View 1 (cartoon, one colour):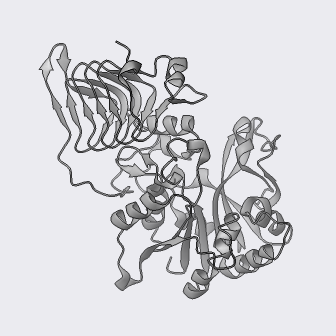
View 2 (cartoon, rainbow, N blue to C red):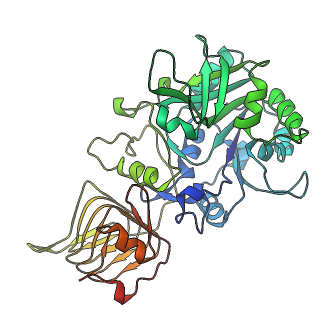
View 3 (cartoon, one colour):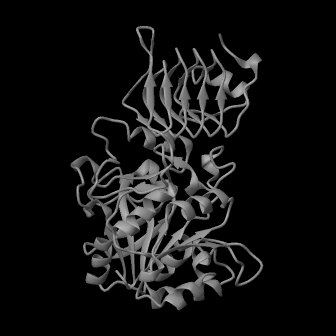
Length: 414
């Protein structure tokens, strides 16, 4: 793996995750209580023994920069690094015009490192992957480009690049976010979707992105342009993510990959973590999920009175939280959340420092950092009322309170 350079694309705006991306880049959005979305791809690289990684940033990257700097120290003595690379406009006066342009504008990093292979991965998906197995497939096929892919329902495939392959997994067709995705032969109702993860032979990748940069009619995107131009005359193959396995993987985790591109998908993916036997397990010591460790005391549960008992069921509760006579069910709490007496919260995500007042009730909601929920407030019970109060309500009925939202007393429901 010393001949592999990782390039993580972490510059997207994440408009569909608004208001969680109002003040931060999508890869910096908290996930699973203590993590950030980008932690999962970083762990995939490090657990796969890839220790030379460039993270390409662009929009609202401040919190992302701070998180990676504090959470991901590497060892330069052994030529290990995770470097933050902001958009530098090295090739002109424009920010990144697309995923391929992001690589083109940073070819100096690739040429300086001179790897044999370049792994270009997105920074905004939730999954575990042993990248060594994908590289072994790439080498076995003597591929110029290998694309990681996974079957998805046809109705969801309109948001992805859809791939056609022959019996040897070689790409023979490509549709970029098609209105009518082509189904997998013999598997009606399913399409083969690109995960946005690529392994290139360095020489071929450089040739392709340079040629694409010279094409004024190109969108300078891997899906829309590079792959379409490559597969007819290059060796382009698909790696079946369903075949990937890692040490300690449980049967229900096979093929788990989530694009948390909108509020409903983000909420559902967090809820995937709280089951007794979760489809995405954070507790596998053989495939650790690293992140920043808060210097916080343990979570505390207080009061045992019959009508004032602090407890949580089927929930993730991070360090520094105090459950003071309130009740939680199927919730994810980031550090330093306080749940006060007689409050009831279910099916919800509460981020760093949220305070829930006495007798408050919350259901199917996402409460962003620093929000103070007043006593007796009700959130998530009436979508129309929530919208009238200025809260975002997703198509799936998830109420979202943006970071530092102020709730006025006249908005309380008693």
